[in-house]
Length: 362
Image (cartoon, rainbow, N blue to C red; front, side, top):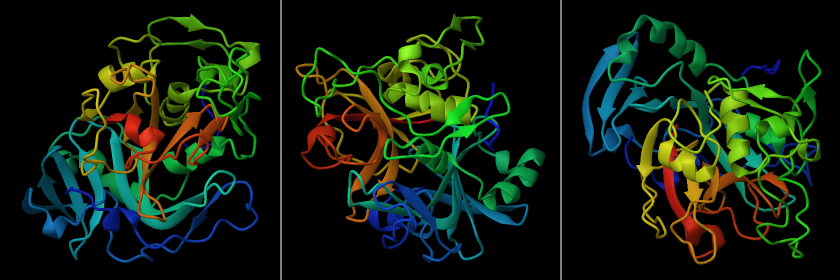
């Protein structure tokens, strides 16, 4: 069942920011929103967070279909350029995630943070994993110019359709609410502190949020729990976003398989795409490989620093120049870019930064 709506070089904070922070979308004070600015309004910043002209790991520039392309490494990727050498898109070998340059947007969540994220990055999924040389293919010649100018909801915009700070309900032709304010999970009676990591219980998957039974490609059938309707935990939210909404395959185990597995540790270890930062059991501090849309993973269980038990996706630097992520969290009781019970940041010494362990590009 599907909803009715449409489905580099080392990045620096300066280039990833894609301009100064903007205003909160009119009428959303106290809730959430994103503001769409004019295309190209922030100058020559690149969607993947790098400046191709200054990249030290860049190969020669080639041309195809009226665009220029350059190979870069670590990870292997193809960067699309305009005539002035500005990045238009970044395609990573072995991954379906593509970051394209589009109109600048400002994302905000005033209920939980004063920070905003302004970016020209539009994150979408390719029809299949990228391979070197695909820019010369017939499908790409049609897909790229169309997608480059597409302003329908991308991964970022779709994610905000579930914000715990308030999002409008949307229903498909079958009457299924496929978007709207999501919560993390039922109240956990064993935990008394509302800011505790487990105040709301885990184990709510995307089909619990939807309230519909689901059959996975291997024939496994699952039934939603009525008590979890409208709820989605951290990994369940990524499956709701990337799987149900964006069309990436899913399976329902914590081992290898086609598409997204169920839990955060399994997505980190066995998920599709490219492992960017492996989990070493200590805080990951080199963020240079990250680009918007990358999944980020955390080990925040007391006494088990090497165990991945939380995940989100990277948004890019916020209005304070800090690397911010978006995830479904217990304290916020659902998807958030905010700072309740720990700042949603990847650097520094705060709770989630200390627990940051790895990253994967789907």
